Length: 78
Image 1 (cartoon, rainbow, N blue to C red):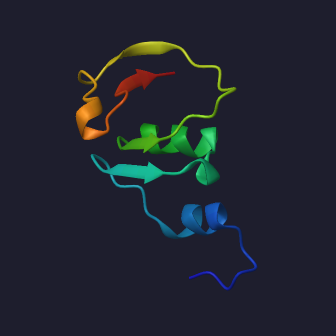
Image 2 (spheres, helix red, strand yellow):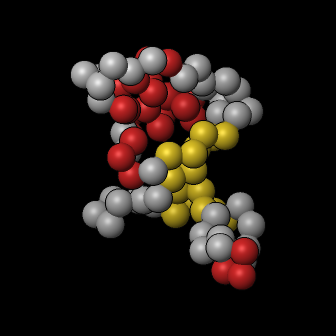
Image 3 (cartoon, rainbow, N blue to C red):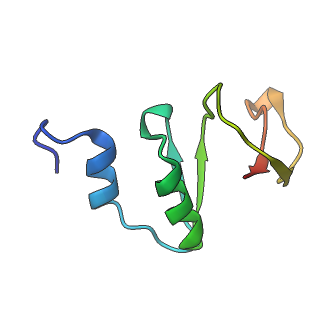
């Protein structure tokens, strides 16, 4: 899939199909707002850790956090 000459994010974009109603999970190394928008526009969802300097607008809450289970936030943002 990747011979080491292609970045991980480029390999992911080119080789992972975006399917409606799917949930994709990414670490900060795959942080690409245009790709996140494409995932959302395709009717899918994504989960990632947000960068400290991200400018976001809070739109709502999926469910209440459960720190005991490791869920600190479950928010809908723009």
